[in-house]
Picture 1: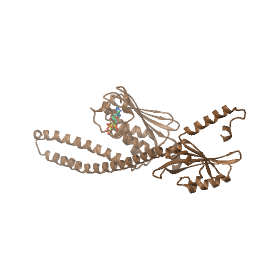
Picture 2: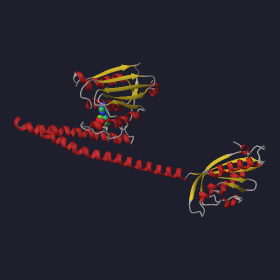
Picture 3: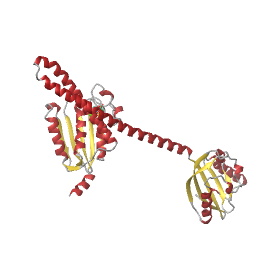
Picture 4: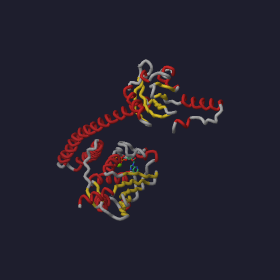
Length: 390
Ligand code: ATP
Ligand code: MG
């Protein structure tokens, strides 16, 4: 928009002219930005709007004054700009400056923009100062919060790994202690042995549970610090899942608790880290069994154009809608699962592992009907990996 557009038509009457200027004046003075114009040739500040008072100055302290008295801390830069402006025809610039309030006590950060315009063959500089203190304060607060969050995260990670290592040693001692005592028991009669055996069994189960928990916590600490090694290989995903299902689940569970395996789409090789995917699928499948009392579980692999989806569905207790968005937070457990043992770490580890694959994980669930967890792995990378391997 050129300045000429503000010039009223010559057909305007005196009253219309007055109204026109009053209107422009009102707009000029009600803007939050500090705006002033400089006659470039004379180096004089011509007009300044009311917002200058926010810095503690009066309009008359600026209007008609040489800008050389202007209290910008970056006056040198401004002079250069002005020199440049007097030579060029049109230019707009914008940079951050610190402006002193009257008395130079407080410096306020501003974004300083300038536009050169010509009016009746004279060059002017239109300067706009936008107070950015609120924006800078927010940025500063945000930066501080982020830094704190980073420090806490690091602290948590190192605490987790130290604590879990410390737990592991006494657990191993307890476990081997029980094993040795079991050996001594062999010399006892059946009658004397039975009550001990019952207690030792319980100790063994609880030790195993704690060891599992510590392993999860360690994994989480490691993946937090992005230290989980990620070694993708190009493999047959269908065979991989089929073997896991047959060896680990279907061989152990009764007919009505089996995993039904379905494959859809055009089968192709997939790049994945077998260790991480194995751990992820085990976690999801163990949830299916844990949070459902009956019914088969379905594991479907669906090959699409750019991705392959592995969906695992159970017919269990489901997850309340309110809890769905937090399931991947470490230690988060849904409100309907308090009676069922768990630590809330499984899915957060799975999420980290799937992130490593640049894949995605979704959970869909209906309360008391069942849950479907879907892992989606990209196939695009696979093409590259295949090409690299050939
Ligand atoms: P962990 O796996 O560490 O032993 P967990 O099973 O409680 O403990 P996650 O696997 O991370 O932890 O799952 C988080 C929560 O999500 C669970 O506590 C449970 O409330 C809910 N959840 C996960 N899978 C299912 C499912 N298939 N059916 C119902 N609820 C589920
Ligand atoms: Mg779990």
